[in-house]
Image 1 (tube, rainbow, N blue to C red):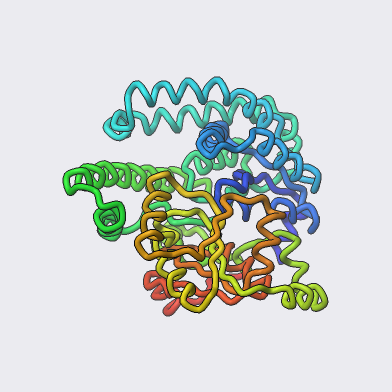
Image 2: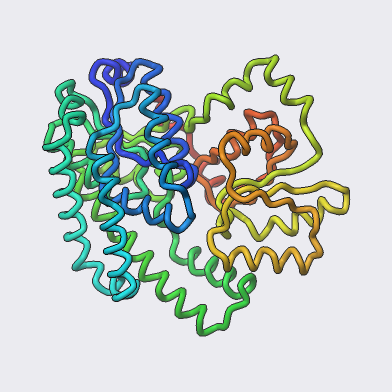
Length: 421
């Protein structure tokens, strides 16, 4: 195909986050990055400094060893991906700046950000552009990439700083810019308020006043995010070459297909819409698959971010049903907060559930061992764009039990893929 031919000749500058501990989208980016050199695409990874700060924050909150960050980058380099020099330089700088921003947040509080978001918005974009400009001027790896006329590929739409960075580099080097939609950064405010109310009132059992205050703050946050994303998409429309998506969901629910049509920008769906690690793909080998299937044990597994949106509070009810027939449920992942964990444990106690075995966050190797022996994936997620968890489970011969999500079902019921890339 023409795009593949152009990529093989020119190469690719990827803007993305490959650190798998942060969720499904980074895991997909990690898997895809490792594959590009194998199919003849010279690939360079650049991570904006603003995002490195976010990664540092998440590393701190989740208690991830900093060595994990470097090992991830080294693993990608080993597969033939070029890592920009500035990524390593700026990763070293994050320690000092991370502490500085944490102190600012402690001093002013989150309301300071919400109240001043209009004033801060252009300043944030300006800072992102300044940092990107310094990186492109100093980084020999990036300069070498663009001497070969590489295309720019932003591999997740969830972060405006990536989009601003990609647009700036595209305009500077006069190169095509593609954006991949992997998530839904904002949606129906009405649906959001209802879900927040239900969660806090009926699961967390909070007081009415506290719930109303929290919802008010969340509405401000949602409004801020929507404003910022709409502004960002509008600002890059001239430099954007095309929109790609892992499924129809973000194109249709965010009405970006209409936006792209009005801007005369092509929009297409990648088929297949996701990527799995090489270990999972090897399961398509008949002998390997037979070996896995004969070792299956009688238990169900749930692995994802352990939060309300992924259906964590449904798991005790499912486990309670399976308990009657002597089956257990294996739970893998991190709870999004101690509050969520305590509520989950309270539900288990109330239902007298004793057949859940919790493993916490596991390495890829340990997850593979447990997942490959399970028979069923239970995945009561409330929303998804294209679930990597479901795809991995199917590769391993598992049955999958999940919700038929109405919003997504209505999209798939009326539309066909626009184009295969």
